[in-house]
Structures are given as structure tokens and as C-alpha cells.
Length: 134
Image (cartoon, rainbow, N blue to C red; front, side, top):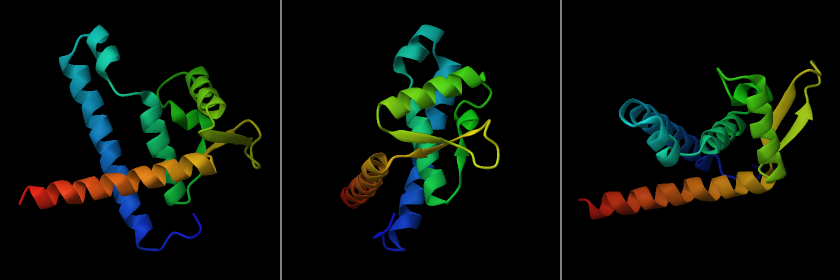
């Protein structure tokens, strides 16, 4: 994150948290009001939440373990999700130095840059929308 001004990081973190809140609200509302088939077809991707969670963790300088990617689910789900994201070049995994049974997961530099750009674009779109709504 070198080169980022101190003012940008809190804004990006706030936007990320807002997007996570909207994502989780959508999942909750869809889950309560749609059939299982419709919910699967219309719900946002689970990878979206993982990427936002990893982005938030990176901005907060927190480590994320692979097992945390699918809370409440079986460890195999977290492993599959991490492997898929790694194959897509979105994350990297490495053994935890204090406990080799755990895998650390973090965004790749390329994915970090994409998400930085996305947060900035969301902020700009929000400002534009607010200006037109006055």
C-alpha cells in the first residue's frame, strides 16, 4: 500500500465496510424472501464477500487464516474457495509461521490494486449521485 496517502486509506476502509454491510443485507433479505433456487441464482457471489473481507483485513493490517473464509462451514469449503481464488490470481496462501497447520491468505498486489480502484470508483459514483440528488 505504499504511495497511498493517509487520507485515502480511511475512506477506502469505510467504503469497504459499507459494501460488506450491503452484501450481507442482500444475502439476509434474499435468504428470507426467496426460494432456495431463486436465492442461488440471484444472490451475490461468496467470493465477493471473501475479497472484501481480505481487503478490509489488509487495510487494518490483520492476518486472515484460510479457515476463516467459510465461517460455519466445513474446512473443505474454505480450502476450495481459497484454492479457486489463488488459481485466479486473486489471493496468495502461505503456511503460518507459528502454526504450520494454518494457512495465511492475503490479496495479491494485483487484486489489491483492483480493489483500491474499485473503492475509489464507488466513492466517485457516490459523490456524483449525491450531487445530482440535491
